[in-house]
Image (cartoon, rainbow, N blue to C red):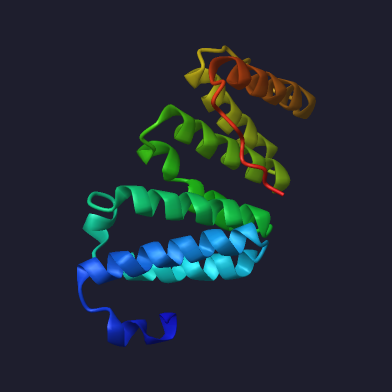
Length: 169
């Protein structure tokens, strides 16, 4: 179907419907551990939404946000930390809920830790702690970072009982 999309999809409504179909296909692929294919479906969905970039984040915000969040998580799973960070970068600022913001920050922290960028991970960790009204020292060691990130997890569990982190592996 995606091969014939240029010939079949001519209206905004059809493009959005096909973008949603691609998003659902990516979710299915992810559920059966076909991560690369899931990324392909998301990229195809994004290409359909690119035709009207202003509407993507206004009229179709929920779909665009879900697709972007899913792509960032898939990039993490596939080990593409730079792509994960780049894709995830704007999500924090546009997220509508507190839990979506926290999920975005945790993904950023995890990607930076895996990518051996501990200073940026510390900065993201400080942002989470600041949002939770927790003070953190300005000088930090890697051991201190691990200890503080565990505190972040504990604070989240206490303050956001509905928060269920997405398993990255």
